[in-house]
Amino acid sequence: MKFVIQRVLNASVSIIETSDDNKTSERISGFIGKGFLVLCGITKEDTFEIADKMIKKLLGLRIFEDENGKTNLDLKTVGGELLIVSQFTLCADCSHGNRPAFINAARPEQAIPIYEYIVEECRKAGFMTETGEFGADMRVDLTNDGPFTIVLDSDDLKTNSVDSGSKILDNLSKETAADVLKTCFKLRGAEDFGEAINEVIIDIRRICEAKHVCLLLVDKANRKCSMLAHSHSDDTNEEWIDWRDEEQFRLVETWTNIVPDDSSLIIKDVADLQKINLKNPAWYKSLTKAHVYNIVLCPLSFEGELIGYIWASNFETSKTERIKETLELTTFFLSSEISRFRLLNRLHMLSTVDLLTGVFNRNAMNDRVDSLAKDKSNHPLGVVFADLNGLKRVNDTKGHEAGDILLKNAALILQGVFIGYEIFRAGGDEFFVLLKGVTKEEVLNKVSELREAISSNDSVSFAIGHSYVESANEVLRAFHEADESMYADKRKFYMEHKELDQRRG
Image: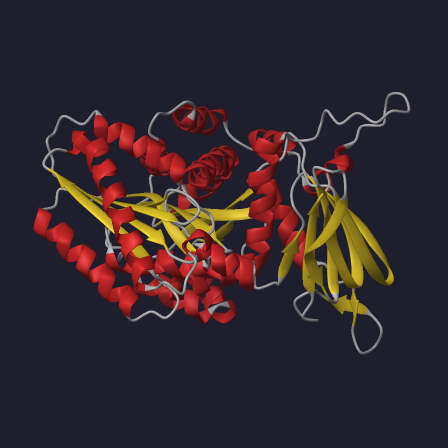
């Protein structure tokens, strides 16, 4: 992946469109003031993990001057904005002949999700982020802000994991290496990753002969932790810690000030605990409260990015070096497997979730309907269609950004009413809800709740249709009946609101 980053006073991107009679016109797709214009090239080898690293580097670049004229300020400090434009020609291979080859560029079906992810992550980080249109004919205009043009290449951010693993193996006893390799191979090709990782952690605790081993994932973007797996002996007196708590995430953040990036932290005894107390009193308090009297803690990193920690606690101190070796080799294998698992999960999410509204998308809906049509369990099923009134009118009069806000608000209302049920965005302005295992009365009550919710909302209005069948495998009939019911409700809406042009939304 490559970013060409230009520091600008302002920049814009226009989409060039050609009509049927070959007349061209331009419309501005994105405009920013002070900030970065970023040309983004995505290759076949790129992943979401690589995108995360590039985003982190981009947003952390300190190339704005402070009051002393030194480039010490980053984009956030100066209130800068981002204009990110896709540019597949950055992936050109000019090594053979004079005609560039673009074989390394990712195909649209791979590149678009990664490009959209980069944009969305920058917005989540709090930056006003404008874009062009992927694959469109575009013209970029800019006003430079001094001599700052930087090429950021993901290849420069990679570490040689093979060399790292070799160094670890060189320092290990053959016995420890064999044990760790044997258990970590369980992850390769495992059908159930969660079950396999639990088995691995149980084995690692056995190898370490520790009272407790824990594998914790860290999500910096969303500021949360999650325990992926843990194992404890029956006779442990360690107290349970809920790592999902925001306070615990803030505690974990402080570990980076104590734990070396490429090594382990060892706390063997009371003296070591007292050293921690001087450096990090909050963690010392947490350790002593949980009855931890010794610990070996290793960071898990993948391509230079911290993804979590693994630790063993309450063990025989004579085995400290063996435990350190065990955990360091374990992190070498686990980091890549966990990153692969997270990538697959993220790809699954992108293929099934509507990124704008956060509900399931049409692909997920089609798969679910097909599954229900084959369901022989005879569970009753309710279906609700909700067609958003006025979306086209808002897009035409206020712009697509206002239309996106309307769609998000509509989804939030549905999520507030249909808690615990499956909600899908079936099309541009159509939403679809499945209520499995309910009574007809419960479906009607939910429809009433939805009507009440939109009656008190000034912007969101739905045409609503619903249906109920005694068996889920009749989902197609329910689908058809709910669709007809929805269109009847839509006709009624426009009869009551004749001032609105039905053709416009």
